Length: 517
Image 1 (cartoon, rainbow, N blue to C red):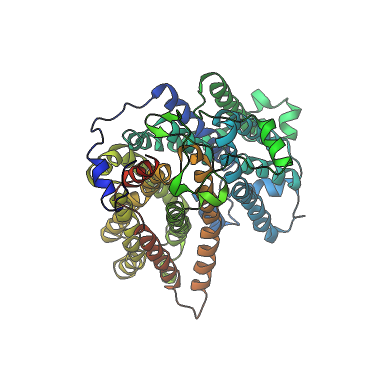
Image 2 (cartoon, rainbow, N blue to C red):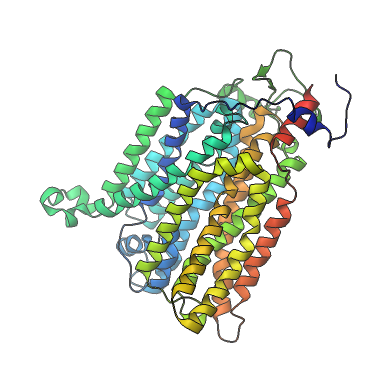
């Protein structure tokens, strides 16, 4: 055994021995990972364009351009749950939308942890099956309870967050994982285009295409069944690709019936072990030079590294979600009240252009920035840019008040979009830290599940709190800058959490390997 040295010396000793050549991406498996990112995104985006803008809910429509499913408004009206009371529509839309995120937050850790034990592939097959059933169920629902149950099932079995990221960590290493995250935006860019196209063109087909579907009583009775069925069919294609092409990436697995038996008998999932700082290593268990051990229970996963990554995911997710809601609200609010007075079509065009620009920048620049500066530096820069991003809101409004919406305003909006691109890259940087923060390779799924649970909670709390503060700040007699103080506070929290991370994730990986020698 090597004599223990100070932590500050360990990274440099090990980094000198690391290979400089990059491992090629395993495209025979990586294309499946890209495909598996899409079913849930396509399903969610299929539901968004069921109806064009509702004039009686202009603000709600603008908010929901940020994928908050504002087009549930028409669906809520169709099923008659409000009994004609238009003031209650937003209430039921909020319940329908939040049910997905709450279910996801409550289950993502358990699915990720289960995948460490029984394997990624079985969990993915279960999740995709449930997702397909939930979409068929949504299209056939005629009651509000049926809609809520469908969205709860979809959120509870969302496979795109925890397990798929674990698969990606399994099939890549430290040299090619940054390159893998270069291609990840392709999935949501495609889903952003395909999902609304399916929902927008195929909803109410009997009314839109009477020559083709006008005689179908089924489609007249269930006007949203066709787009939901197409989305479910796409999910089934992903299921087939998973079943026939995806190779199991977990080397040591336990049959599900044994886990149930252990649970029933209140036995431990794994063999006796020590904490993550001194992991027991079984002789002969190694994969690519890394120690393989049994999955750890929750109490041993909450190491300082995992908690620091979790804190960064929470603060970054909170900042991102709050900004995503405030930005379209700012564009839509009148100049006199502190906004920019833009109409919905222009707002939609701006947000769409911003999304495309983010994906292109990620594809072209992320790997180069990572190789040049390191994941920690790129991440710290990204969250630090959150501060000028927020400051630009009142600056843009001040310019609009003084000179109208001219070149100066659009230049500041463009700068804000560019700065947000760096904030968008922060998630890819954090994903690189998750792999090395896990106490051992056998607990990558559970570690990712803990972090994604916190990220899901941030997606619930961020928009809700930001919307409340924004509305409060616009009321007469209140400080209109209150929302900016709120966002600045979150940005400073994110910067403070970023200081907990090293410059390079390999520092943690080398240190973990050192303790296993």
